[in-house]
Amino acid sequence: MDAVISINKPRDITSQEAVTMVKRILRVKKAGHTGTLDPMATGLMLVCINRATRLAPYLSGLDKEYRAVMKLGETTDTQDAYGRVIETADTTGLSTGTIEDTLKSFLGRIIQQPPMFSALKHKGRPLYEYARKGIEIERRSREVNIYAMDILNIDFPFVTFLVRCSSGTYIRTLCNDAGRKLGTGAHLFELERTAVGPFKISDSLSFEELKTAATDKGVYTMDEALSWLPELRINETLVRGVTHGNPIRPDTAAGFTRDMETAPGIRIKSPEGELLAIGRFSAAENMIRMKVVFA
Image (cartoon, rainbow, N blue to C red; front, top):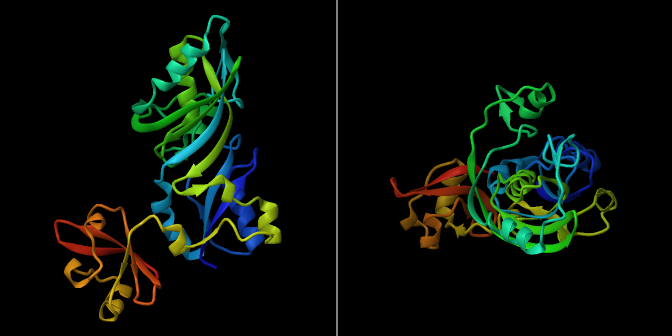
C-alpha cells in the first residue's frame, strides 16, 4: 500500500504517536508525517505510507489553515495552554475593534522567532529538551506569510479566529506576539489544523474510521496526493529512461507547458497514466531532471 492518509489527530498525542497508530492499524512498516502538530493541537495531519514517504518534501511545504482560540491576559512559558503562566494582565480595557485591528496587523509577510518549546533541532536535539532544562538557545528569526485572518468570535478573554498561512508559521507565537502588542499578553488556548494545501479537515479520517474502513474518504494514491502539481505524459520511447532517472528535454515532451518551468515539481506519467517520477525543470540546463523515481 503506497498512499497518503489524511488523519484527524486527536488532542494529547504527539504526531509520532499518531503515525505509530496508523502503522499499527494498517499493518505497514514504513510511514511518516508531513508536518508536526503539537500534542495540544487537533486536526488534519497527512501520513505517508511506504513509497509515498518520498512525497513528504512536496507536501510539507504546502500552506496551512488553522482555527485557533487565543486567551488574553495570560502569558505562558510555552506560548500555549500547556505552559506555566509567567505573567498576567487586566483585559477589561480592551475593545473588540482593538483586538481585530491588532490581529489583522499581522497580515502579510512577518518575522517570527521560533519558540523554545518546539521540535526544531539544535545539535541534533529538539529545542524543547533544552527548554525543559531552562537552557535558552539562540534562534534565528524567519519570515512567514499570513495570507488571511478571519475573527470568528470574541468572548473575553477568548478570541477565536481562522488563519491561513505559509508552512512554518507558529500560531502560538502569533498569539504571543499579538498579546504583547495589545499590552495584555496572550497564549494559544486551542488549535485545530483545518487544511493543508488542497486537503480539508472534512475529508480526514478518525482512527476509528481508519480501523473499520467505514468510508473511502481521506485515502489518496500518490498521484492523487500530488494532483496540485502539473502533469506531463511522456511517449513510450522516454519511459525507460525516466524509470532509470534520466533527464528529458522539454522539446521531446509534447505536453510541456510554461507553468511547468516554475512548478515545484512535475508529475511525469506514462502514456497510460502511471505515475513514473517527479521531475523539476532546470532553466540553466533546459532539462527536466528526475527528483523522485517510482519504478
